[in-house]
Image (cartoon, rainbow over all chains, first blue to last red; front, side, top):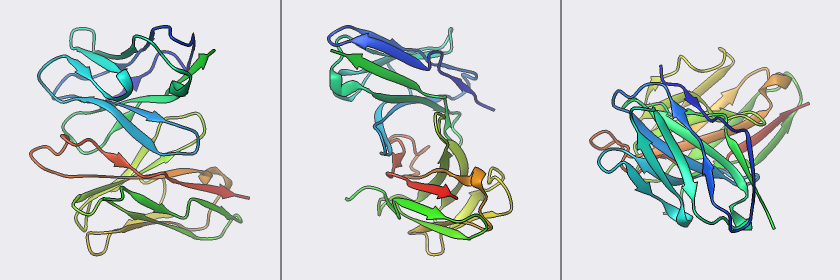
Length: 112
Length: 117
């Protein structure tokens, strides 16, 4: 079964600095990968997804992620963060099955 | 398209009572999923439907949990004899199953927050 690990539970960063949120998954067989953002008391919003093709995926709000099969990673990056990016971020994966497996989440805290 | 709608947004119930949550998916989506999210954790898969058929239910947490999607449209999740450990956010998601079905991702609702006192 697929498992997803988000290596950092919290990431503090100053506004306009770059950020990387790390995600590792367990199985590369037919894997599809996603990043979601969750604001307080809200559901999950899709940031970006990797299904196939180019390993660099661009999403909404200036985020991007790179699929690295050899390192079984799918790290999320943004070159310059804003206060409004403060939220919980979840990495998720599925092996062409029907169940998304989520990581434990990373709380991004952007400081002025 | 109004997205995935979940009702109620919040539910407070006494231990031992039964509760039912409703999810209305995006109308053209044929798959519907239920997840549970406890504080500080990622969502945990519970069950899913393709149209009205419940294709996976082994992850339901106990026999107190059940879900239905009678006409392949909205779904309900029922918890019988609630316990304090059932307090969590219950999330619903939908997707379109088309050649793998992941092209559109999974669209999540805002969730129902259950508090058992």
